[in-house]
Amino acid sequence: MLGTIREFWNDQRGIAMILVSIMLPVLVGFALLAIDMSRANGLHSDLQKGVDALALAGAAELDGRSDSITRANRAIDNLIANHTLFSTAGDHQIARADIDVTFLTGIPASDSTRLGANGVDADGVNWASTDPTAVSLV
Image 1 (spheres, helix red, strand yellow):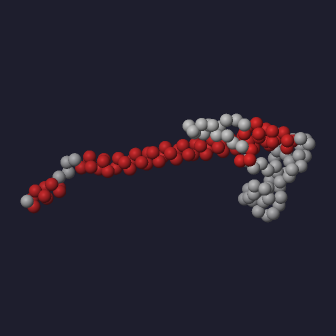
Image 2 (cartoon, helix red, strand yellow):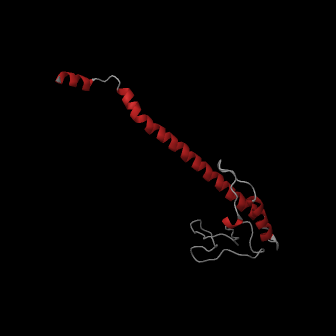
Image 3 (cartoon, helix red, strand yellow):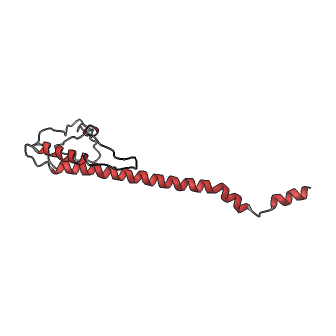
């Protein structure tokens, strides 16, 4: 009896099927996770391109004339009015209230100086302005 159990325990036939059945869900899970992360990174890239396009469209209108901020806001509104299709769930409307636009007179000399959404840097310097002749494409 003990010899039969020992023989069964040492038998290697069919071990590959057991290993595959254990590891297959793990491999499929990692593959699906990689696909999901790839889609998330692609969506992040698309959103960043959209925000960059909004900033460039607005900045291109800042030429120092008295109506430059009005024209910049109009250019941003035109891009916001476009339809966005980021998923199969349908259209996603972006409202102007979802976006904060701050016009700056310049930027800090150091890249390590962070600006807040209101245009004030970490040193307390206010770079924001509503004067259309003071803001320009930097």
